[in-house]
Structure formats: structure tokens, C-alpha cells
Length: 364
Image 1 (tube, rainbow, N blue to C red):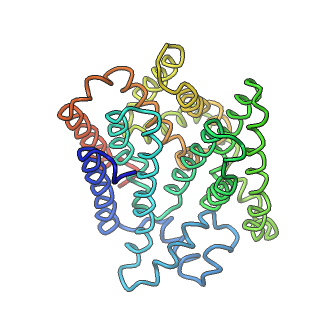
Image 2: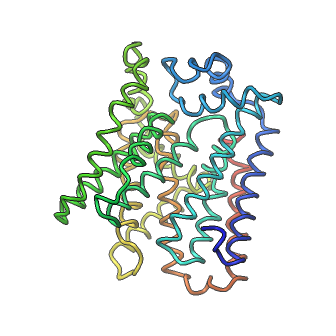
């Protein structure tokens, strides 16, 4: 894909990817270790390999397994356990670029790519030694697989890749459940409404095939009396009476990077919702899913507690980027076809995201 891109797009992709990767490496080297990182290292990564992935209470199994190997290298331990996430971030960006090229113009793809590469959630979790960059990655891959069901026939669809994505998603973190559940419900309803029953088979078989692997992977938690801990990771009754609005504000601040300016997030969502009812020529299925995946936050806010809400809804990072791309394509799609305008727009986004990251309370 990248070798056949026009020179401008290829250089743009490499420049933004390099910037995001180098920035993650820089923060990995200079940012003090956080409590969660230290706890994960001491209890899982620094132990034997099997302990890094199989010990109960480990909700970051894939990350700790990968970080265990990096920990063998002769270098600063904090930097080494953060390095896999920077690499995973590059894979995420390349995957997003490949996916966006199918649904958006070249210029809008580059704008969306610049946003995702430098937005606060991706920048943070390309640095911090936790599993959430993998949740974003496998949520995106799951989205790609589900949309491939519509684009291809059942015989051509690769169920093995779908099953692998689901297994690795849950291996990354149990919070993968939220994105998986919403995407499955959306496509189930859509295919049933359109009476495309044959296309349900690859989705159902791909999902069912993942169950025995998930039971095996999480058997130490289930039989080790930590099943309630898995449930707690994805759900806990709300103990904060005022948290309904706090939850939405926290997610809005985190996704846009503009703290205490959550109305920006609301405007993005409302604009995306309005586009669903226009004659906009883009992929309505993708737009509607992106809007619905965020619009459920009020319901989510009724059942969660305030400590880790942004982790649990991290999959909407992709949805925010997609809605912004739909807005850009509908509003100024022709204007940014000019390379100079495109470059200025991308630099503006990168500047805003980088400034917001540096002053964000979550990154201090």
C-alpha cells in the first residue's frame, strides 16, 4: 500500500508516524514511572514468563507478555517496558491509514491520520506501560473485520482473523468488551433489518470460535476466584451521585484534549449526528456506528465509577477521529485538496494536540 502512494502522501505518512513514535520514545525516557506501571512491573513483568500472563488479577495479559521479553534487554527498565506500546502505536496508525483510505478522500485521510497520531489518548498510551493502546488497535481491527462482512461474501471472509482479533482484544484488556458488544449489536441489528441472514454466519461463527480460547486464557481468573475482578474491570456500580455528568465531561476532556471545555466534544457529536440525516455521500454505515458508539456514554455513565472511566471507553478514540473526518470531508473537503492548505491544517492539529498533551492533567 505505502509503496504505491503518491510521494506527498508517503512523505506525509512517514513524517507524522516518525513524529508520533519519537515523541513517545522521548516521553518514555523522561516521564517518571507511574504507580500502575510499577505495580504491573513488580507483580507480573519481573516474574517468570508464565506469571506475566497467567496470574489472576492481571488485566493486561497481552501487554505484560510482550513487555516481559523487552525486559530481558540490557537497558533502562522503565523505558523498555514502555517501548512495546510505542511500537504498537505505529501499527495502530498504519492500520488506521489503510482503513481510512477505503472510505475517505486522500486529503481527509491525511487530516484524520494527523489527528489520531497526535491526539491525547493515543499519545498517552503510546507512552504509559499499560494495555490500552492494544485495546484501541484491536477495536479498530474488529471494526475492519465487521465491515468486511458487508463488502465480501461469506465464503471469502476470513473467520480466523476475526477470531484472532477478538481473542487478542480480550487478552489486551477485559474492557474490550464494550467496543465488541456495541459493534456486534449494531451489525446484528443492521443485517437483520436488511434481511442479510447469510452474512450473519461468518460473524457468529467467528465470535463463537473465540469462546474456548477466552475461557482457557482467563481460566486462572475464573478458577482462582478472581472472576469478580474481571467484572469489576469492565463494570462497577456508580458510587458517585454526581458522576453522570462527570463521566461525560471526563471522556470529553480526554478525547479532545481540551480540559474543562467538554462542549467541543458535544459539538462534534451533534454535528456527526446531523450528518447522518443529510445527503452526504460518504459511508453512512460507518458514520452512524461512530456516532452511536459515543452516544451511549450517558447510559454507560449510569453504571460506572469515576476512577477509570476513560480507560473503559478508550475504543471511542477511533469513533471521534472518524466523526471529525466526516465533518471535514463534508465541510471543507474540497478546500484541503490543496497541498499547502492540507499541510497547514495538519500542522495546526498537531500543534493543538501536542500543546494539550503537555498540559493535560492525566500526563503530569
